[in-house]
Amino acid sequence: MQMSYAIRCAFYQLLLAALMLVAMLQLLYLSLLSGLHGQEEQDQYFEFFPPSPRSVDQVKAQLRTALASGGVLDASGDYRVYRGLLKTTMDPNDVILATHASVDNLLHLSGLLERWEGPLSVSVFAATKEEAQLATVLTYALSSHCPDMRARVAMHLVCPSRYEAAVPDPREPGEFALLRSCQEVFDKLARVAQPGINYALGTNVSYPNNLLRNLAREGANYALVIDVDMVPSEGLWRGLREMLDQSKQWAGTALVVPAFEIRRARRMPANKNELLQLYQVGEDPWEPFYVAGGKVPTFDERFRQYGFNRISQACELHVAGFDFEVLNEGFLVHKGFKEALKFHPQKEAENQHNKILYRQFKQELKAKYPDSPRHC
Image (cartoon, rainbow, N blue to C red):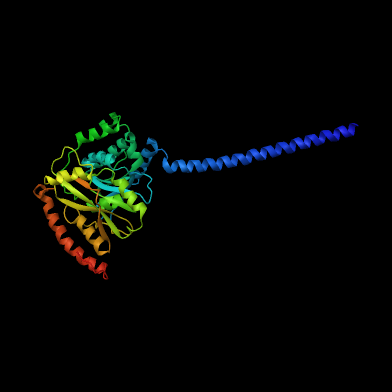
């Protein structure tokens, strides 16, 4: 009887252990399923809602690392380049707004952030040691107080090779340390900025516009390269994304975004109807900018200051076989006319130099594209 009871007891204990093992295996199985489902849900969530922007501390550490590198010299040896003072994660199929500016003209960046909903890449030129320091402190302030800057903007710095940009000292950040919001940073910049007339920097340093353009669009598949004092029409980024996402027909085609210069306007036109109203009263000069993917020729960095720098690249784009298609709805607005009489006198010689260089450039294209039937 005792043996029978012991056997039954051992049997029930074994059965209980087996049931507990089965239960544990089921819980483990359900946990794994839950984890996989959760990951799928998370992936779907991040498809629509990207992860939160990086913290301020992460961005500041990145800024310090970029500056501490000492930069690299460009091909001419005249300029020092600091890549990635600010970085942002960009979809390779996205359309990046690539622009460039002197430190004083960075105040236009606020308007671009309002109108352009996608990623931006900005190359900043500091002509003097003082401007290089201002650029670093300004980047520090913008990264601290402007969430949009941290989320959507990549920023690079270029200065003459004889200068090195310094890491901002937290103990001596100047008046920018007193600012507490993004708007305050831009307001402060507007007060300290001294924008030059067109490309007149007031120094013996040439503005390396094509170097800055190449730097801003570096690594981008699709980029709209513009000047910083231009304003996109509302919805331009979304419209371009839809066009490029819906069809592969744009390979080898440059989508031209017409840019209009406006003398005076209380409000920059947001859509085609508002633009046409200004057109009818004589605000009619325009020039093309474009978006193109694939092997787009770089801007020739021998062109500096003013004259033939942008047209040389458009010329090569044509000779290389790209076709041009003008957008019907999207456009850019340039604030004010560029007036030749206002150019810095020392820069007129460079304009003439660029004219001679452009003739040489066109001859070089014939050798570079010997089989192309096109010419400029």
